[in-house]
Length: 463
Ligand SMILES: *Cc1c(COP(=O)(O)O)cnc(C)c1O
Image (tube, rainbow, N blue to C red; front, side, top):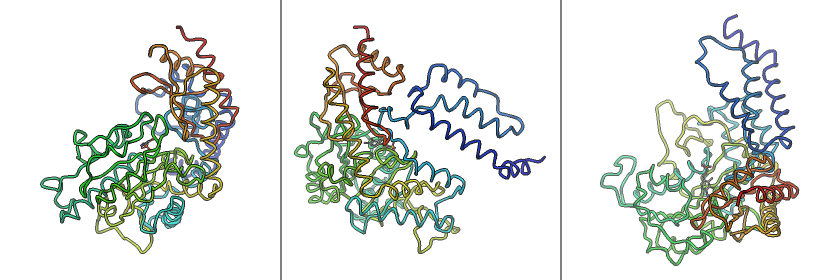
């Protein structure tokens, strides 16, 4: 059989896709029982993937079997409800199912002409996001891989606008001789903000750093004098403490000076869509651009990030490419708003998440993460652990009186237990444990069970 016939029969028999679905269902069914992090054995078995590039076509069924038998156990159970590492979202069932279906569509969402369905869902979702965050009709959305890209695009738009206002077309003329742009950021800005500044050629050494308080919040009264050449980076949700910069105050100061404010709200911006938490993001509508992930707090599958920008002209000019074969339509053409041209239709998962949850569901989901983080902090404190931060959102920091080496041992014990997974970070020059409650699946029992694992690990460390 030639290769095309072979593939056509693989599709026609339906066996291959059913096999994948069965593996997926099997994985989901057993996620609660397995170790949160892969066992040592599962990782050792990955060596079986190391082989010569095949010379001839293989067996599709066998490929899937290998992927499931060797790959599934070596995945991290981030969807289990007891994964608290970094800031990692799980996936709402409806978003996974939507992803499965749209994977079969295999759309390219560059243009309306290439995928009317993706274009329509992008337009609908864009409007919903404006409404959720209380933004004006001027605001447009870019649907990207994550916040790193979203921040990059927001800063590219800011650069375009600042230069344009001074008669400098950045696309045509570039850096040499361009107006000098200042970047102002809090000391605890996320690494991806710094990366965006580097990638765009602003230079990390040129960032004007502003002191933060003991929760990592930028101190607004310490801002340097701002002007119309300045981009101010504000953080909504600090990766260690979950704290929020004083957005309202910073935006007022920046707007008076004609500066551009970008809010990095990768996981925290969703607080703005929740009545009981929106005090954390008060004034957010006064910024010029916002980045937020759907794959963290909202629990859409990876990868799913959003940039919102109030200056469509600047954004589109900063990112657009053109070619004679590009047919723009009166509909939404997604590639106008992204650096990529070809792009999978990740919008279906974000749309499905918002359509499924509605305002009430978003409220329940996001406030629920906060409630379980607060429970975590409370139960840890009752068990004589030291919680270092004000748990305003979903992040909990745990500190220790023992040396950093003991903390490393403690984290190792905890991770090896398989009961839950938390990571370490540095806070005030000490090693600490960082807990991020970011999964819809986490129950109150998951939290208590994880606290018990903390107690156990403490008993096992060598003091
Ligand atoms: C996760 C995160 C980022 C980076 O987002 P990606 O989606 O991983 O690219 C940026 N800023 C903050 C505050 C984050 O938590």
